[in-house]
Image 1 (cartoon, rainbow, N blue to C red):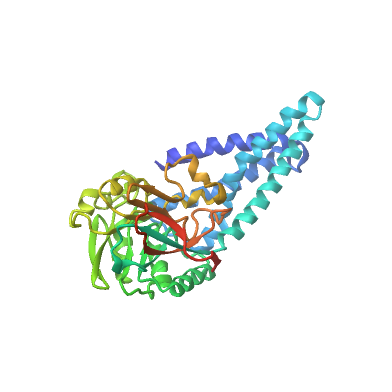
Image 2: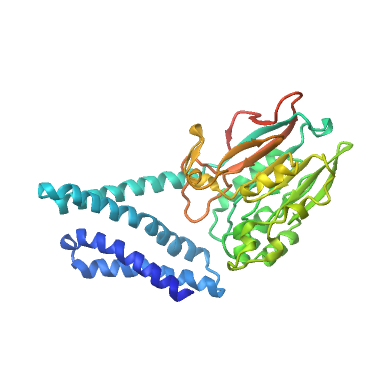
Length: 393
């Protein structure tokens, strides 16, 4: 498998570097030798990345100083090459193909750098989103119950301590009755769960701290990730629901598995594959239920079985979105990509992620701690509304 990845990646990278080289080799010292050397240096981090498939655990320095520049380059290289090629084609009829190609290439590099800077700033702008989830059938005793949701932290030794401190501060200030971690706690490696426990293990809530599996938790090795979550005191729900007493009433909180566990990917764990029937087997008909499902694609099955509220993550809202238009990069690929959705008497809310995955690049889709309060809405269809003005953490 590693050999196949190297061949495919090598061909992909060589093609784009050839396009760039055709434009810049004539004007840079060393010509094609310099281009080939730059391509080799840019490709080298992949060899280090592939060591992870054999159990190697990358340090914070490797992730920040080697992996991050590699991913920035892999994202920008095709865009830069295509911009240069387009400039060349436009300029050829006027005898300035190479010049216009190089100008377009340079302009694309500058634009990408500006977007990367804006995305980095956005990845640090943690927001606290306070919402009311309103249900006409909400038991009166549950009115005012507050859930604090954090999702897609993708934590590792490279994660900003300042950002983690802002997250925990926001969670503590929210004074939630219940804390829900809705998957992707770690950043691809099972040992990252130790950093998650250090950051969040001291948090508590009157009704408990709950966590579920995300696809990256499965890829990393779900058995070890689950053990770390339980060791820090979180109640891990996988295809399981528990009954919670509250103010003389009761409700149920359920956690699903994740579809990633049903495949043959690395770290796959069949016991973490979603089983909605088993998840809700112990829930009485009509009981008010809050489901935690990392992948929002599971929501229709939950809604069909009467689950009133589902909290998801996974999509990151594409890490690029226009909230005022209800559009995100994830909307191009997913039916349920961002925000809240209603189906009959069931609501879905998709957290945009509280950190990032891959690159610290968030434009519009800012990282979020969600504070969701259950409210009774007599005679109305369920909906989600802002409960207070949005505020930066």
